[in-house]
Image (cartoon, rainbow, N blue to C red; front, side, top):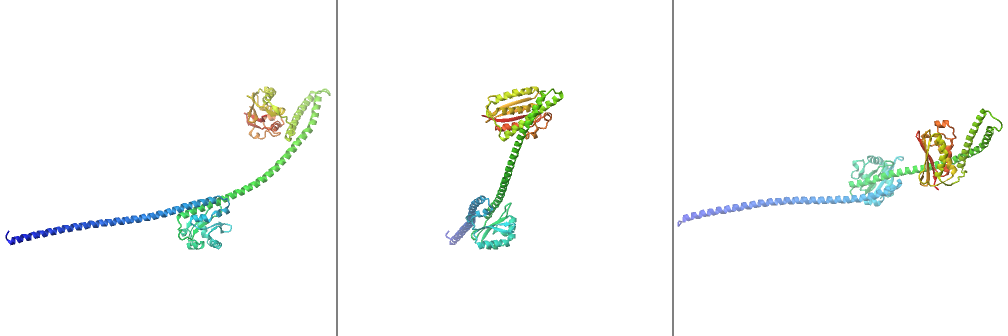
Length: 502
């Protein structure tokens, strides 16, 4: 240890060791520092990336917000436009005059849509030109210039109408060969929408809507709104034409009805005159026939009584026929006189309160003999209390006798006849039904006419005048009643009539 060299060596070794340790420590420190710096750079890189991403997201949010604001503005504009178009179309649809349709389009509606100018025209096939129907926002000379432009460009406008496409200043050249700038110049606008008017009937045309505001941009929504408007204008034109046709047809119909009514009135007057002449003629002839008939019947009765001497049987038989036929003629004459008196209002109806039930019972007793001869069952079905009627007793009995006589005549052996009576409102309805041969359907409408006889086997065998039912009808109508018949061939018939309750 006292050797200086050894000590020096030890010191050198220690210094070397210390140097190595220092170097190692510095190396470790430097390595740690480099690693830290690398981590810092990575962190900074990640932060930059995050910042860039956040910046992109912020830009995206801003763009989205701007787009949303734009969409909101567009939506608000579209809603406002829809309300404006709705009010305008409602106003247009309330008129039925074609000349008033375009006059309903006012500047105030255009302003709500964001426009201040409008021009409308319809194509005239007769004049082969566009006729101006609407001009808003234009002076007279400007409207004249537009009309002149239409004359020179009518083929292109007709092409636009034919294509049935709404276009704007941003899309017109895609569909029609128009000079957009020329259009803007003539119509004095910066942007516009033009839409065809297409009624199914009537003149077609177009509606031009524009603005000279450079800040206004035409959108698809504007085109849709104007299309809705022109569709309504087209529909209104159709409605106006239909209304005009209907009105004209109604006027023509009213004129025709008035003309026909006048002709009918004249015809009715003529029928009344003819009917009166017929009634007067029948009445006159019937009165004239009464005298010779009375004489013939009187002389026949005297001869039959053999007051002028005894007669051979052959002569008596012929006189009996004269007497029978005279009775038939007298009955026909009396029926004709009764019908003519009722028709002319000269027949006096003695209207009194009558017990219809009692009348039916009395008439049944009268007809019962004829029924027994053919073994026909006659039933009077009058149940309960029947109100009294206001009627002429003798005339109502004639109704029953005629109807029941016919029922007996046309009902075969072992048949049945039923009389029913019931109250219906302020009337009493009487039904006389039989199980006879019935009436053909084509004869039902003529059965109550004078001298009409149904063509059947019984009428061919039994003679008649064809006046019985005609007389019955006149008597019922003179009582303010109604009479009708229902019948089925080979099943029977039902004659029904009404009389007013007292």
